[in-house]
Image (cartoon, rainbow, N blue to C red; front, side, top):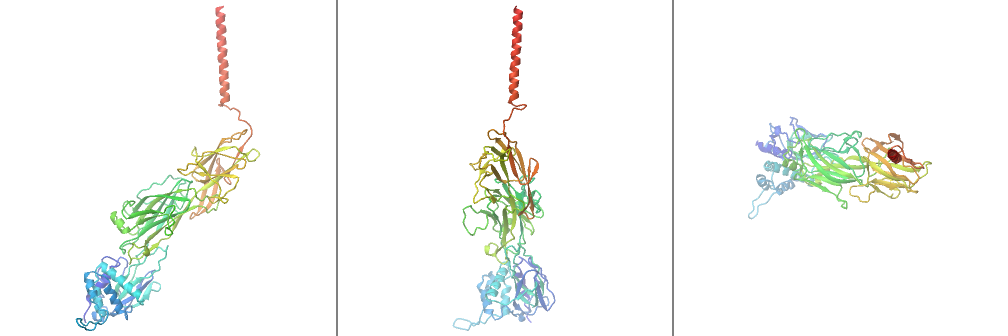
Length: 594
């Protein structure tokens, strides 16, 4: 019997859809799969946690070395039987390389009767088609062959054998097209594996077509200055209590808020190109500023900055962008991650990290927390869009998937004041400033809307102020209480600062009150979207509700030691003493003249 010894080249070439170069099938190991051949008469495919369907293209007797079929035993497999013409037509229609193209074009999908100038031709046998397929030996041809077969089995509703609990069992020896049919949903952090073409008996498939992941962090500035961004991996926590990179932050309106995402590099060896987009959505209380750095950090060796490299684009949704397709505030698009890293001189490895640093401003729309168990914060979420199907180009959005979204939370706070006389009655005419770091803050007066200000219930008899943003020109550094508004509230404040409430002028006939220092304390419930406690310290003493009552007493301020009163006494006394000395000298001179 004639042996089809070169049929192993089919397996080797087709397996190149999973690897650019492979050895002979009996020892084949592809980058996406680890394959072993056993001596079982009927084999199986173990497909791990993925769902696979195996379509039998050819069947026949394996030769002793299992490098191919015994040539004259090759017949059509169950996925093609009865649809041979459609299969051959699909092969002839595709554009392969020169050798494979000629072999495919020579195939006949049906008998052709002799006619004037036309030689009679017979329908190509399974063996003849297998010989033509052997010619598809290059990596590109093997990839195209797998795509052609995929199109054929889909268009013709070919019957395949599906895996059950990760195993396709009792498979007769044959040449199979194996398709990963795992359902990939957004947030599932999974990817579709390369097609497999293989002469098979038994094979165990180890899934290596994985998906990247994303982690997002915010700078928690309780005891830390602004972060220093380098080319090494940052240290972070997720316990919501430590300073530095965390899942929560707290800021004053107008402050810069710092973020980063950590994304992993997946196994991209099966992909020709790889789509990799970091997307981020800010809530209304946050205004995006800029991406400040992008750093590739390998498991070993120094990090490499990618910001500004070819193939890395940043797009920002404008405030007036009404497009329904803009699902994020901004994104960083590595148009083809493999090409970007290659151009940057980086040899990527699975598990390496990419850190993307960016910042925002806590703005005038920031939600304010005023009580324990509050959920009024300013969330910010990020996710990663990546290539999900190794059988498609990574550049198309229709073959991408989204990672799980990761959310961090920024908080801002409030405290209130009340001006009264010694009897506790409202008192107007007092002038105040709010100081931070010994400097009077620029404040913006805000009127309630529908009884609310930034998520906090507002009252008509109260004055409301927030820190001014950079460039706002209608700010004030002082304000005056009135008879109908002796209460005031400051919102959009940070827990890291000491705020000093200073009465700069007392009402007429009243003494001026001493300055009062206010500090805000907080703690969060993991993962940071609920406030576990909110506390206040007023002049270093605990305060229950953060309402500072400022009392003025009637009366005038008499001069005290070191004041102008003693200075006057010193001046008058000094003048009197000088006058007495002059009189004494004059009297003595008169006496001498006598």
